[in-house]
Image 1 (cartoon, rainbow, N blue to C red):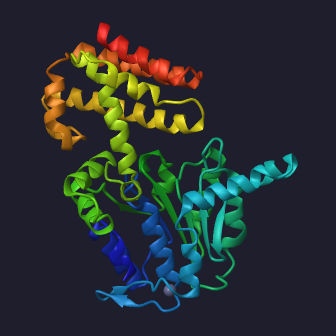
Image 2 (image 1 turned 120 degrees about the vertical axis):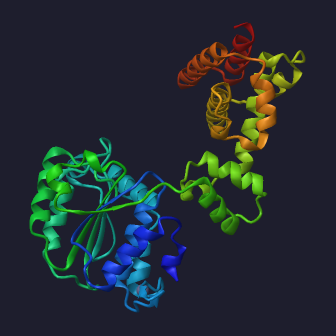
Image 3 (image 1 turned 60 degrees about the horizontal axis):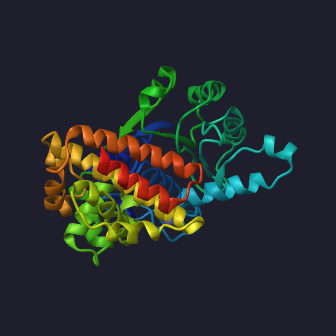
Length: 365
Ligand SMILES: [Zn+2]
């Protein structure tokens, strides 16, 4: 029951499936919604349903089997991040002349194409749209419908004009899906030719329920923490490295402890010593810096009387006690120091020394 695996926005999913049931799915759809709301997942589900060889019915509406030749080949693009990285790497390895002419496209089934934004500008370019135009008017070869998914519909000007031309006269057997978190950035002439389906962000509660299914080994308060840290993004929540986060948070709290009045600095030095040079130390450092930002932000929420916004809810009591030791100005200056620490890391300063001096600067100010 694959559509049953989509989380959140049940009304939008139902609308899409009802249009599929009545063969009224529009040729051009803007699928909008914040990051993590499942735009690409839903687009892939629609492409599979359109082309599934079995096309089962669930809850009285069309679904896809997930096992037939069409479903499995389309599903190879489900992990878009990986396919995108492969396509970029392939292009990097080309000769310079070919490199300039090669555009990034992801096609794992002859009738379904994903058009991601093209690096380094991360915009859809006119040559990518030309590829779409080059094949969209041919009948589907192995499925029933040609599907073109623009995974982030940010177009360069010329590309937008080309898309507009296709939208004026799309063939009967093709569907264009424009995915965006900001539909108002699209040309009004593009918007007026598309139907819009809007996904909303998942609530922390919806993400927690989802985590209860896929991460039963986590404690309820850990699931609550991850749901808040991931801001409604299911993909991020599922693959969240909780152990790494908790370890980084422990370090971050130890770094801040002297500024909160702790006299004994031995814990601090034990922590900073463990930040080594080299690649390993880098990812450890990056996550600690991210956690420090989130802790400082949580204190701002506490100071401004909105404790419900605090993301590290599982240590709310500890954060409240610490917040009493500092004032608003301290939080602002600590955020500035953290920015300096971050740019120092880009200049390859010694990590342990930089952390020592960061902790010391908070104590003085
Ligand atoms: Zn199928």
